[in-house]
Structures are given as structure tokens and as C-alpha cells.
Image (tube, rainbow, N blue to C red):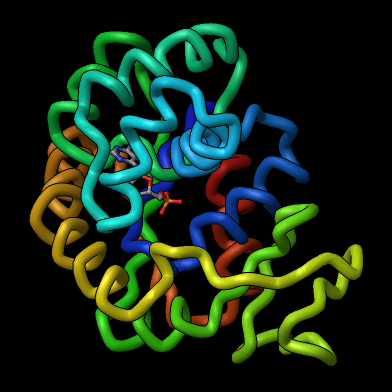
Length: 209
Ligand code: AMP
């Protein structure tokens, strides 16, 4: 069983969706640096205040801040974790390697035009965090959360120009990690344009090997 898992892929490839399913099935700890940062921003902590400018522009938050933020959480989840949105740079991957070995890096790919199409249609509930997509599971009312009735909003970084920038950042800084993990024989590739249920079953089968 593989329990120390890294999820790689451009924004919008379905990492969050797959992460929820994997965590639900195999019970490892879900560590999403994007979620942790959004929580810091929401609470206006010092880290949140620093991170916010980078996030709103679609830029990466500096490596050292991210590594300091995540290190303790990874160490506390020694039995198993799923890293979603970390590492995002070779420097972060090297820092992770110094903290713990991993069992597998799951790479979900998706071309730029599909990322833009999906993310401009993404909405998130202001109250409960449920993610809705106006393309795939359109709620009856595009402004009302189907789970709790709260308000569905667009994340600032899901605006088109920010998405384009996030994809550029992905290609420049994060895509090199595919080679990094391939060299270590840890990568498994998935085509993110296929249905999310089909991808989940394949991932779960591979994790149980
Ligand atoms: P995500 O929800 O993973 O798309 O992350 C949202 C934003 O948080 C990104 O566009 C970055 O600004 C920031 N972020 C999340 N994870 C990282 C990371 N590992 N390194 C640097 N910035 C990050």
C-alpha cells in the first residue's frame, strides 16, 4: 500500500477532487497548501497577509514560507499523507526529500485551453467550501451552494487573466517536477481530460499495489 503520496498537475486538472476521494478511501491525511494558505488569509495572520498578494496574482508564495508552513504537518502525518499543491518547485521537492521519502507522485495532466475552460466555470461556497462547476455539475442556481444554501462565489484567482498566469507559472516552475520524480522512478501519469471517476479507480488500484 502506498501511503506517502504527492499529487502533481496544473491548476484545474482535478487534484482537489481526486484528493478528497483518495483520502476518503484510504484515510491518509490531506495536506493542501492552497487550503492552508486560504485559511491563513481568511484569518488575516502574518503569513496570510504576506501570501495574499502572491495568490491574487497567481504567483507562487516564496519557497521558504511554504516549507516552514508545511514541514511540521508532514512530520506529524508520518503514517500517511497526500500532498496536494506541494511541492510546486524543485526547491520544495528537495526540501520534502529531506523531510521524508515518498511512495508515489501522481501526475494528472491537462492542456491549457481545458484548464481555462474549467476554472472560469468553477465556483466555491463562501460558507462551507463546497466546490461547484457550472460545466460539470451545475447547481440549480449558479449563485447558491447546492450543499448548504450559502453563496457561491468565484475565487479571485479563478479569473481568466490570473488562470493564464497560473498556467505559465505551472509550466515554468512545477512541470520540471515531473522529470525530477521520473528520474527517481516515482511518477505515474494520468490524463486529466478523462472522467474523474475513471481516474479515481485507476489511482486507487495503483495505490493498493
Ligand atoms: P491552489 O489552491 O493549490 O491552486 O493554490 C492557490 C495559490 O496558493 C497558488 O496559486 C499559490 O499562490 C499559492 N500556493 C499554494 N501552494 C503553494 C506552494 N506549494 N508553493 C507556492 N505557492 C503555493
